[in-house]
Picture 1 (cartoon, one colour):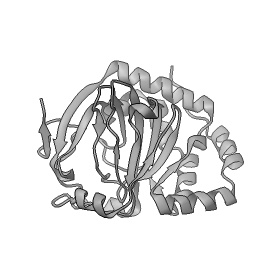
Picture 2 (cartoon, helix red, strand yellow):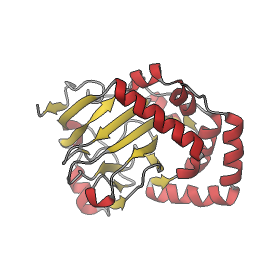
Picture 3 (cartoon, helix red, strand yellow):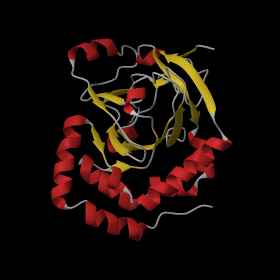
Picture 4 (cartoon, one colour):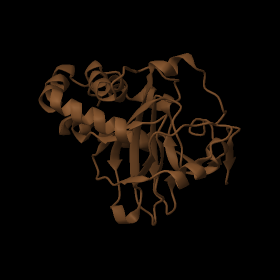
Length: 254
């Protein structure tokens, strides 16, 4: 069953939660950290609908990835994925919500810049599932500026799967220098509970998930958006591992 988001209901929810004072505080926190928990960006009813939708999509298409990526200093990607185009073709709910004017307007106010629902088709969405000991989404940045991450399921903090971030960094795919950045900058670590949602400045926040230290389930839905500056540049690096496990920059471990 497909439920499209009710924009009026979402607008009423945002008017109640995101007052001017709240937006002022969130804007500065997001600017400072490149990260912001926003569990209340939707109500419990819509969050539950998204959870049901993601689990249905996982049941229909899930592809394993085990590789290292050259454009991020050979950091690992150990997880399973549901690809963007499959999500777009099979989930009217996720499609509609990612383009919601109410949602994007609120996030734009927090980011203090216009957020645009215009990215390459293979980057609009991604569902990832980590379930084996050692599974991780290793240190990386995003090609686009913004992402909203839905924590569909997460294990206890003691089992790993937390997020680590280094804000205000930059990505050179030909010379990432990730280890130098990690040595010269503080690393923030964030834990979550199932149902959390976070907003991430992906192009300037180096980030990773801490590897699971035992078999456990961590499922997320990623919605990706652009800033105006992203629209004028072309993507490069041949490193789109989520779309093609044999991408040139991906060194398969299988």
